[in-house]
Image (cartoon, rainbow, N blue to C red; front, side):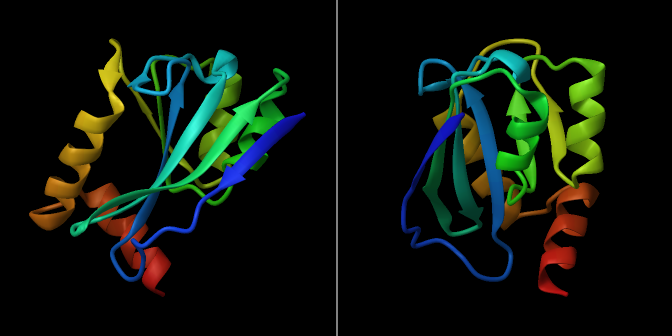
Length: 132
């Protein structure tokens, strides 16, 4: 069982990506995919970012967690098991693993800056797919 809080975002449109961060403290990317207490989901563009959804995870069911992230383009975490990684990739969500704890706010600012300059090929592909 999971509870979801949805917020109306002012960020949207062409060039916007939806990114989820696995977090236990609500400030950092500090959680293993399978043991995250929640995922904070943001809509991000070159103009800025807004929180879109907070997904609270109440049970450790990989299939349910993957289904809850189905509207996301990218998910960040500090670790993930091979089965969960395969399920995320097969669902069309791009996984990004950090080896250390990283501030969500710092990562958001980096993504906004990157979208405004020269995004890597996988981000360009996500944006093109959403625009089609």
